[in-house]
Amino acid sequence: MTKLLRALALLLLALPAFAQPIPVKVDGVVAQVGKEIILSSDIAMQKEALAREGQTLTDCQMIRELLLEKLLIHHAAIDSVIVAEEEVDENIDRRIEQLVGQIGTERRLEEYYGKTILEIKEEMRPLMKNQMTAQRMQMTITETIDVTPKEVEDAVAKIPLDSLPLIGTEVEIAQVTIVPKVSEQSEKDAIDRLNQLRDRILNGSSFATMAILYSEDPGSNRNGGEYKGIKRGVFVKEFEAIAFNLRPGEISKPFKTEFGYHIVQLQTKRGEELDLRHILIKPKVEQKDLDDAKALLDSLRGAILAGSISFEDVAEAYSADEESKLNGGVMMNPMTTDVRWNVENLDRGIFYSIENLQPGGISEAALVRKPDGTEIFRILQLRDRVAPHRANLTQDFSLLKNYVQNQRKQAKMLQWVEDKKAETYIFQAPGYEGCWN
Image 1: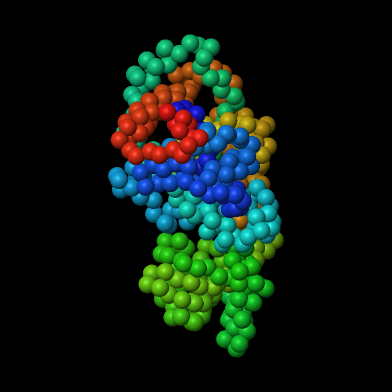
Image 2: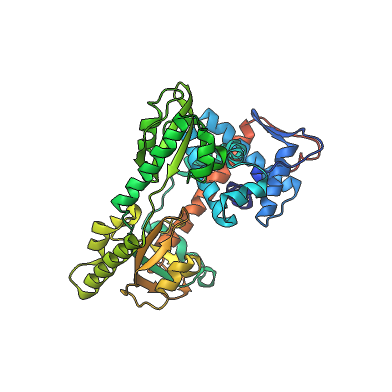
């Protein structure tokens, strides 16, 4: 069962191939759990997805993973465990961003799959929803499990010393980020540009053509700025406030969001669902804007080093990173929900910035280009560095607590699966009967 759960987790990550259809000769039902069916094409698609991640499973191993997923989905429906469409959309968008980051550009991603970004997203949707539903159901089953410090201590005491994991070098890091402020002239230039494009469209030019030529939204410009089936909650509130109040065919005046300035044309409105086109123009960051941002961060770093203000106070007052600024700038590790980072898992830019710092040291201000192209300046403080060691309760309590807690969750999950298998209709086609005993 451990392998089943681990493989299911791998399937939750193995999305790139889901967007690429796999040719199969016969697409029949090979298994069924309740009302959830598994087709031979599902097996082929999942195997191809894992192959792209360097994983190899037999048909029988794959059917076990799919049966587990379908069992979770089947009982999620019974227990009213629901994943909203907006959540699915957000996860698809994040996955597309990850893929673009890996492959380089959206155009290269489209060329790789032979499809537009919108087509890739649509093919991801049902698979992503299934996987998120299975994952949420699994979380629901195990969410009440917790362990006390005494239980952690007792469990760790039973583990032989040489069986405790070796922990590599870990660090605790805090940051302050400054976003260069765009000049009023650059903002005016962006608005003027959009007004010129709007006038051309009102005088007969194609909105789609103008979007293809001039929009700076890489997710839609090659589709003529088009987004279809937009529901509330998908875009930022400023965008939706304009879009949902337009009449079909109407073109908005330029308006601002965190991404830049837009004009929007409403194509169709179906209740609370829209088809629209938009053009995005981003105000240009000039060299003076960059110089001013760096100068501000340099002066703040100097004040910290001089002792006239703390790093924590600077982070709270000035940092643009909303996730860390209210925590004194401390960066949380999303993989462990802890403040410790294994140096092997650090972003290379961060690693090189703190490599030669002593605890308490602060890096010089450095220009960082984010995945969306935004440029920011950042300073980092090395709060602590922990040398490689064998896990122990003093230094690694959070890690060991997670280990003990996960062991209990796994036991709970194993028991749940056995109980539900006994009360749920499960069919396996000839040749697959022994795959899930």
